[in-house]
Length: 198
Image 1 (cartoon, rainbow, N blue to C red):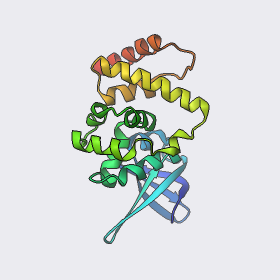
Image 2: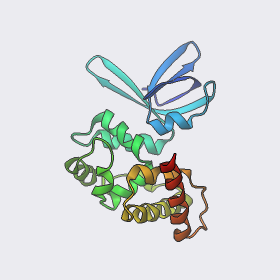
Image 3: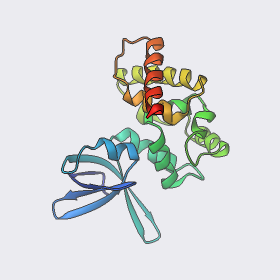
């Protein structure tokens, strides 16, 4: 089983990348944010991988960290989801926000993800709530940031913003654990406004 891949980023496609590992080039399907965050062509990259076999087709999925891979595997086991929809979920929302939505039973946040309806969102929550120890074992600083981002996400959802807009704002903001929620909301609104104007 291929657990990790270390190599040089050769190319980046719409939903996959090509990584050279010596004399072999591997096509790896990744969430869109992961493909973007890996850096420029020629960069050294490390991906945590999952091998999916169906009939005679073998697909290699790659993720930036163990938490994202664990969430992918958990989502993949939910009835009616499968690997492609699980990948779509991770392309639309970051792992911390997804974990928060599942634990807080936020069906509406999950429904904003392309391909996820109310029934599937409810099934994800029922199947996975309280069953994601990979993320809950994070360091204290990561847990604090998760809680802060969750509060910000809830506030922005209350103002009517979509999960994608919220994800982009949260990922763009500079990390400052001492920043008050009100200031984070103001900063997030400025970021969303600038993106909508472009």
